[in-house]
Length: 184
Figure: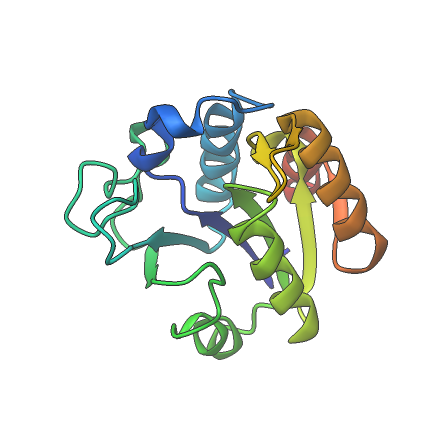
């Protein structure tokens, strides 16, 4: 597992904003905290991705109250923090170089939300040749309304994106399986 890193994507206080309330998996951050503890115990790399928006109306506004990491997933000293300003963690950042310089080839993706930053970052990682895994209990979705006003509930959005990602871009798993494999 030495070539494996845990990616914690956009798990910031912004997700506590009421516009993000309709989550299908509200316990996702607690699951990520367990994965963090397991990766720390195994002394494996952890990379925290922080999203910063220039738009003051965004819950991820660079100078807003949503900018800090959520308490349960705060980085420890020595853990890598990479800041991004677009949805994809690989665009405009040194994430790929950081991973390649350390010989990391397998990524365990956690964070928010499966139908936005998670989706595009996993797809990019796959296209760059990384082996990607997504523990489904360590991510979430929210309700989505299309241009015609049709609402899709968070669970439907989650299930659809998980199916699409699993069809080509990553392996789906659960956090308990990831943790069990760390000690195998």
